[in-house]
Amino acid sequence: MTATRSTSPFSILLADDDRLQLDTLQEILEPQGFRTLLANDGEEALEIARQEIVHVALFDVHMPKLTGLETLQLLRQFNILLPVILLTADSSSAVLHQAIQASASSVIPKPVSKNVVLYTLTRVLGRSYGHNSDRYE
Image 1 (tube, rainbow, N blue to C red):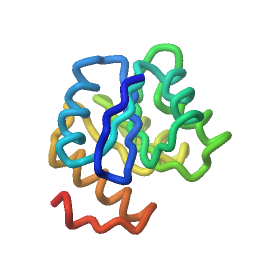
Image 2: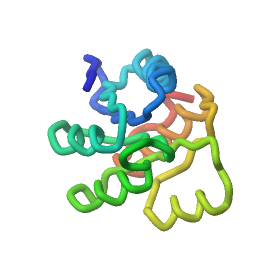
Image 3: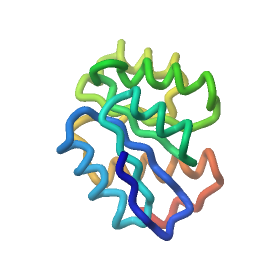
């Protein structure tokens, strides 16, 4: 696990087996003041979520060991309220339906866009924590 220091009260858990994707998300979030927690797969993400304070999780849908959807379902067993955003290159209706059934907060298409990530994260923070969404727009 890699964590960064920040002045933001929000910690964001990022799980993706693609290191470049993790680095990209970290480069988007850290300049905005978020603390990032990095996991290389779903199992590592669950371990981090048990040990750290996490405000929002971003999980890749397709990871080895545990998919993002499987990770989300297991996470719900001990943290039912944690907002989870899924990342996927496959935004088919089947994947979107599975995300809704798993109570994902949102789905972001890959390749990720800085504006889409920040907008989605801001909206999820607003719904979950009453956070002012104007800061990142």
